[in-house]
Length: 149
Image (tube, rainbow, N blue to C red; front, side, top):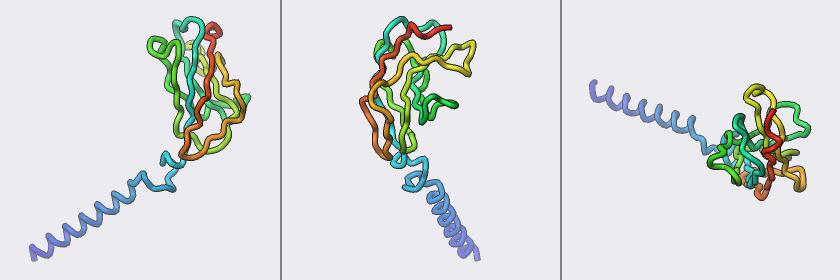
């Protein structure tokens, strides 16, 4: 009797482990979080002027301009000590489609819900993002003298 229970327990544990592995599989091609189903954009930001004493500087991408809400995606806040005078950026995890704007913004810490545009990609628009690919060469010049209240 003891031997039967051990075989059943091992079999049940093996089946449960298989179910957990299959259920947690992020490599599923149909999974929206799979990088093969999203795209990226990359480029370089060249800054002019002096880095602001406060506030966040970020690169953002918008599906429509003028914006009607928050960006579709953005970089982490940049650091003037390491990202000045040039910053190579990549924004990943973008849904395939067209985007009307790639911009650099400065956010005033006293008004964190709004931001000021200090640079815009001026090449051909819209930006086309394809799944599994990186759209590159979206270089921007950002004028830091435009940052500030």
